[in-house]
Image (cartoon, rainbow, N blue to C red):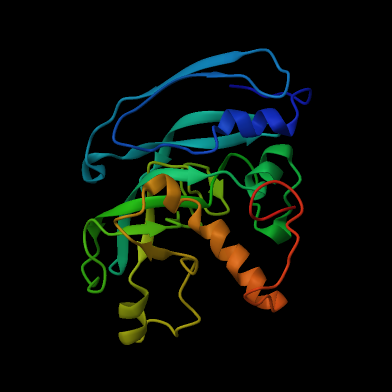
Length: 238
């Protein structure tokens, strides 16, 4: 799907469908109607229901150029390091960070490394494989913010790369215990977080944004009983 300069950012959000469902088999057949634009339909079929151990590549949503967004099929499945856990990503929220990448406004100082770039950083998934030195994370546990390595492979870049079928989290506690790094030095996994099995993956994808809201409330000194104004759409405002 190609979005030229005449298509504004609202359509980009609609196209992303707000949540990128990365279940075992993804069969998209959506009709989109948004902000007065003509109805737009597309089909994208992702047919693999295969364990990633025998997959070389995975599907994902990438920006291949300014305002050009497409489902790609050749993102390398990330390899496990000794402290890594492979997650199957089930949902990923859409953020203004993705907006900026699509519109060509994100800078190198913000982590942008050029196109093609895998979108997404508000992902939620389950652990399906463990590195040999992992001991504090179990199969089946749920995490927000699965990540891709900085060197994604096959020419792709990312800021986080959550809109892909698989991503990585790491056993931070084991890395610190083994002297691999200090508590504040864990590489590129810093925003990961375990969440309850009682929370759906779709709701889990919203946890990162809600954590940001909580952080802001704490930083602003908001206390129980205070009156506050949230200006803009949703709990985060604008």
